[in-house]
Image (tube, rainbow, N blue to C red; front, side, top):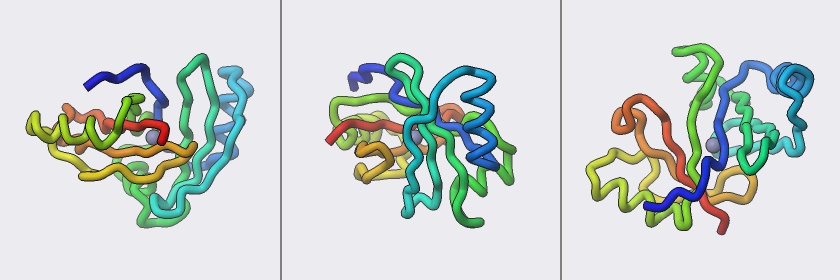
Length: 134
Ligand code: ZN
């Protein structure tokens, strides 16, 4: 398991446009991409600081995982994504170490990345994503 850097921090928001305005006007980052990921029922906006991205996530449907997260915990930090050499290999290694997975195999995420999630019950409450360019 060799994470190279934090690829992005995922943040659940109620209103994507309002969140972009906050991150641009107060923090001073620039949104460079807005993308809908249909199978995850989210609309995402990306801002960048150095090599690290901030991924803002707005639910596009009431049964979106982001809608459920906000209902339970309110808006805020949702997950941390580590850049890996190979997402599937990293998922397998975590599984071998007894970690419960949300994704047994990597799937296509935003920004042309192959992504996979570990289950927060196995990660001390931090929803953890692995991703790699493929
Ligand atoms: Zn993510």
